[in-house]
Image (cartoon, rainbow, N blue to C red; front, side):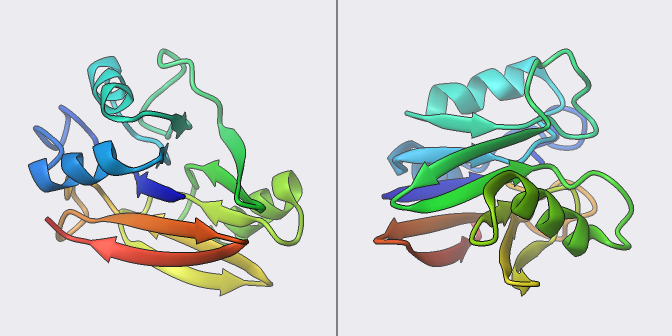
Length: 163
C-alpha cells in the first residue's frame, strides 16, 4: 500500500497551490495523510478531492472551523501510524511528537507530523518520526516537499519528493 504524506499547505495564506506533480502523486496513492495547516476550508476540500482515502489533523493555523481532530491514527499493513501536527516550540519537537505517537499507538507506532516545514525521517526512543515538510514550499520551507511511504508486511520504504 502506498501512502502520500503531506503537510503545511498554507493555502492561500502563504502559497497559491499544491504543485501539479505532487497532485499526481497524491491522486495515485492508496491513502493520503495530511499533518495539518491547511489554513482554509478550500484547501482541505481540494486535498479531500485528490485523495481516495484521507486521514487529516488540524494544525495550529487551522483553528476549530475545519473540524479536524488534533490526533488521528490508522493501521496500514500492520503498522500503526499516528498523525498529529506537532504544534509548539521547535525545542522538544521530536520528543513531543514521539510521545504522542507512543501514547496513541504504542511502542511500535510511527509518528507523522508537520509544523516545522522541514523534512524529517528519524527514530526517537524507538519511535520512527516522519515530517514531509511543506507540500507547497510555504515559508519557512526553502522548497516544496512531500513523502510517499510504501508499506508492506510491516516494513516502510520512505521516499522524499520535490516537484
